[in-house]
Image (cartoon, rainbow, N blue to C red; front, side, top):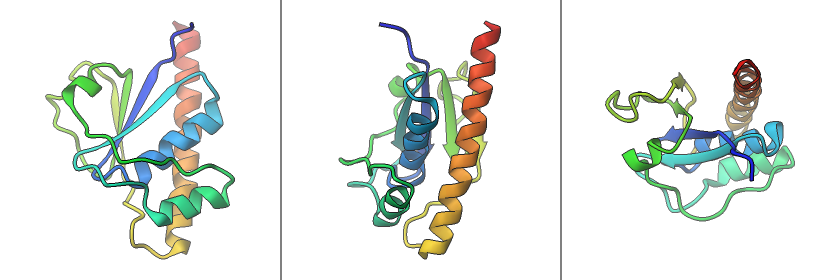
Length: 138
């Protein structure tokens, strides 16, 4: 089995933005990368706004509760993307990371959620292109 670099998307609740990011990595990159989503305080499941926005774009809504962000999880990934906050710099010090100023879609009107979704899609497309370039250089 071929190794798939892991990209971890972390938000505060793992109920919207982080799972949307993971879904778009799967759509854009196929099986080249393994997207993971986690949160500081995981929610019971995907928020209805995020689920509706993904559905409008033809993507299935991930099910199940959110995943807790842990140092063990951070240690097994190749890149960390935080959404709307800064992760403690002591966590996974050697893992490349970036911060995206993505707000939580929960409770927002659908026109705002669509803007968040479309922004996430564009950011994921750029991230995958960068990761592909980095992989080609190695």
